[in-house]
Every structure is written in structure tokens, then in C-alpha cells.
Amino acid sequence: MRLTYFDDAGLFNSQHEPFIVIGGMVVHGDDQLIPLENRLDELVEKHIPIEDRNGFIFHAMEIWSGGRYFNRDKWSFETRVCILDDLVSIPNDLEIPVSFGYQNRQHAWRFIDPKKNDRTGN
Image (cartoon, rainbow, N blue to C red; front, top):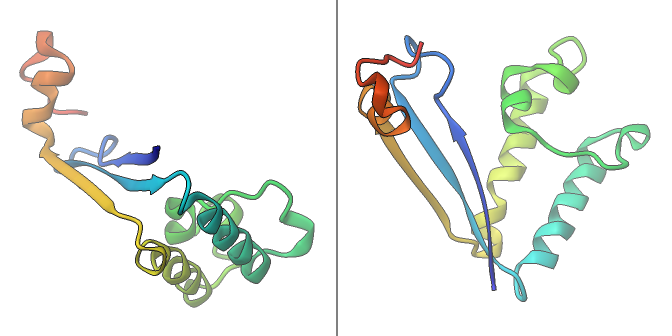
């Protein structure tokens, strides 16, 4: 069995995000799921204060932008980049396939909402 984890980007700001992107991983349920969960647990222990660890979930957008939990007042850019570096190394280290696709947002809206062929995504 394979488990897929995909997410999208580029849906909100048509001026700065001309493409809609979806990307994710295809995880082998028997061979890779437990090592993946263990690695994420290790990174929580490595980077997150003990009082915040229970049920913690990494969100790359928050880490990169310095938003919400990873606000810029508490988390330096260098620290956040180290966390992201640890996270992005997981697929390679565990040999988990990564897949992505993209589409020009102008073209994609014809499929998302055929009644609004001229929609710009604004």
C-alpha cells in the first residue's frame, strides 16, 4: 500500500504566484511510514521546546515566512532554515519518491471553474 501526502501552492496571490503547484510524497506503508514518523518525531525533539511538542505539526510555509508559531521575534531566519533543511532531507534519506506538477494559473482556472474562463485567480 502507498500513502500519498500532497499540498498545493500558488492559489492566493495571482500577481506574485503565476503558477499553481502541487507536490508531495508517495510513502510505502509497510517499509517507509514508521521510519518517516520516527524521523519527524526526532526533528520535533531536536527543534521544538518540550512544552510545545505534544501533537506538534511542522508547516513549511510558517517556518519559511516566520509566521504563527515560528514568528520572527522568537525564531531567527538561520534557525528556521536549519529546520527546513532537516525536513527536506527526509525524502532522500528514506528514499521516498517526491512528485510535483504545475500549471499556469490562467490556464488552470478554465478547468477549476469552466463558467469563468476569463478568471485570473484574483
